[in-house]
Length: 130
Image (cartoon, rainbow, N blue to C red):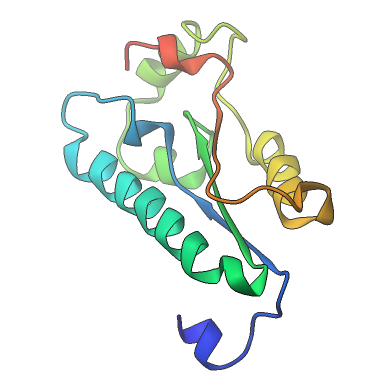
């Protein structure tokens, strides 16, 4: 809303939030993280309704595990992560380069009739036990 107040968003703009597949895929010890990502999705949906009259679209991307500094700095055991990757049907976790084209699409006019969408990009990772 600060962006709106300062008139930093044009009519017909697009906002993309990065949430997580964890919002709808529970895991032990992950309650707070999962809940925070669910809150982002809910916020995005409400914001989309509020901004729709101005033609501003709001969508979410919900990736499964992606190799980022966050998972390597959070104390996850690297070997456990490498083993978990094998459960993904595509055989690996994602990379930021796997996710960014979806963000580009959602920010572009190619998705001009999309709002309140939450797109999963998981490499089939919903089957992973981690």
